[in-house]
Image 1: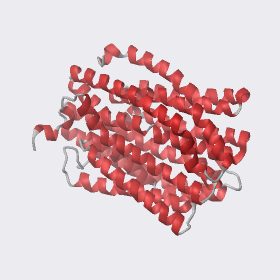
Image 2: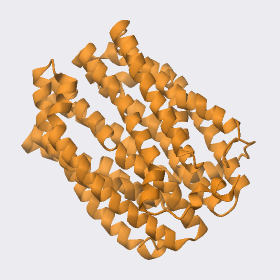
Image 3: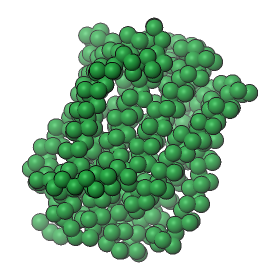
Image 4: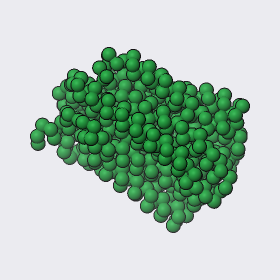
Length: 446
């Protein structure tokens, strides 16, 4: 095995090769978004809008699981990649194994606690008597797959750190296809309703989890399983460094709850169904930003750890240029394709369709600003500056949204709900620019 094969992050990336390196992570995240949104499409088309609303009611619990996994994955990936860049390969492997074991244990604990307090959680999330049975069926099954959910999030990040982004892509594609197939089988053919959607998603979690475990056991990359050394400081550092991602998911959970409550008050259950479509569509459309950030973050960490300032500057410059271009593309796709997206979900419910279509016309502007915010947060995580990363994530996913969501609907009603996210992203971008300039000399990325 040559040095280049063993250390793929050490490559002198140019624009094309960097995008090519990040491309598998981008497609992987796109497929993750697709098989996440497939549940809602099948539920909306083959069950009913109450079931669709129920998925959004329990969504905060899923956000918590993904948030914990992403916190460990991104924070741990930065720690591992930095040590690989400085030549401490054995220590990097031990830290990697410790992070994986911690993720599995946390997933099992979530399953146990969630099932014990299931009813209390659902009522606490604001389910009505009509929505409660749907919520219970869906959440019970999702909790049973919590450990697999955690593991697939961990592996999808760590495949990139191990220099195997294509493997992550292949597994994400397989998981996405499996979820679509099983959704059709369980929901359409077997008429299992919302439970079928949850089982299909769970099977999608299992595929990258099981195959990823086998891959790292076979020791076919520089990063592989070994006997871990228990080091609480590594777990704390990983969690601290990846805190922004946890903040982002927890904030999403809370804001989802607030969106549900606000729309229920303004437009009833059809309003909740409409905001569900917007939230899941937003996740799908931002996967390009998230995937690119995920794919390039280990390269940033590696060059920062190895002290290669010239390559670090080049990498960051390419990243921001690419993000600017893709932001315009996603904005236009959302603005021009919003009606078509709304029709996919709510063709049989005219009221939900009209609410959703009108929402897209305003909501789309958020994509002009969110790409830069998402990448900048990932950049600071890759540079082990969890504080700056967390500030960006907190403000764009919670702080500013909370303010605008509480204020704007009071005098703009539903229009105020749609404006909350674009305004939050715009104000966060202003702060992001300030933080990038403030830390320019410290990290020498410009």
